[in-house]
Structure formats: structure tokens, C-alpha cells
Image (cartoon, rainbow, N blue to C red):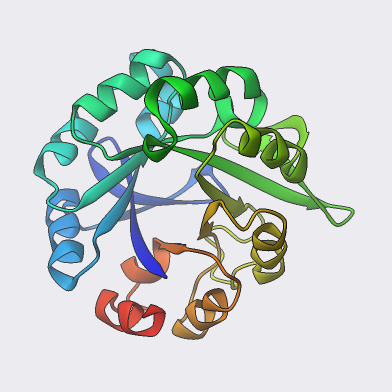
Length: 243
């Protein structure tokens, strides 16, 4: 199981949002490039970079901090945040990203995302499906978790698997940034239904014990942002547990 450290960029700063709320933004005193280099030196072969400015501001966003970071990273990078049109995907891949993470489009426009899978290839795209558990069913939320897509996670994954989807990043938004532990039942069920899809577990990781539990779910990767930033465990410790 891989560890994928997360860096959320906003106006050139490394930040974390609670439940995706820009009004609940914690700014960390880390230089994003130096932090990425630290994660690479510790042995993390991938990093997850979210451009929150692009998520917030759309086409008017200052994406210079993102592209500067993409140019400096020595590890593989997957990046998301504000990817709304085909050119957004192409620009990030051209700038050196190994994978582009697609949120709202994958959650609410399955036909368009399927077209991107065909155009760019399933190795280069990640469907970021953020869910809220309603009546026991994971319902997909979009647009910074503010809107319902009208789709369940299971319906979308059934559709995307037939379109060749290889990578899914699934976040229980009730757990994200809360340090309350991941929703392991969700990932066990996801892996049971779709064992051929590589699952990235995200949201709620607060301890090495949480990572040990995720190993048992069958997920392929664990994304950790806040726990690493807050020093709950080190990259080296996490990698040892996951190996």
C-alpha cells in the first residue's frame, strides 16, 4: 500500500480546509516546494497536490504556484482542484503531472469524463468522488461538496469501470480534516464491488493505527495531509506501517 502525502495550495501557501470550507482555513508555515522535497527524501514516491485557488476562482485563478511546484517536484505528482475543461487536463499533464484528479466533472458529468478517459488514457486520470453517507448509501457531492450530483458512488463506478477507469480517489467528506479516523467500511465495500480499480483512501487519517486499518481494506493508497502536517506521525513511520 502506498502513502501519498497531500499538499493543498492556496495563494502560494500550504493550507488545510475543514470539510472543504474556505472560511475554516488553517495556514501552515511550510514552503510547498520544500515540503514536497521533504516527502520525496523520506521515500514517498507520489504526492497529491490540490490547487484550491483554481477550485475557488475558476478560470480567473492564479495557477502560477501550482505550475511552479509541478516544475520542482522530483516525485510523481497527481494534481486536482478546479479541473473543469479539457485544456485544464492537458496543461497539467504538459507541466509534468503524472495524473490529473477530476472532481466535479467525474461526479456529475459521466459522459464527459468518459471521453477524457478515452482521450488521455486511464493511467493519467483519477476520478475524485467525494461522498456523504445518506441512509447507508454513499452519495456523491460536487463543487466543493456544496451540491449533490444525484448519483450514488456505486452507480458511477459501475458506469466508469465499463469506460476503463483505473484510479478512484474516494473521500468520506464527513471525515475529511477531522482526524476522526477513515471510513474503513466504505473502502472494504468499494474493493469488494470493484477489485480491479485502484482505490485511494482519503479523509480522517489521524494515526498509524488508522493506516494499519486501511491496509486491511484492500485500498491501494492512503492519502494523508493534516496528520503529516501536524506531526501525528512521520512519513518514514507511515511508509513502514504500510509496507
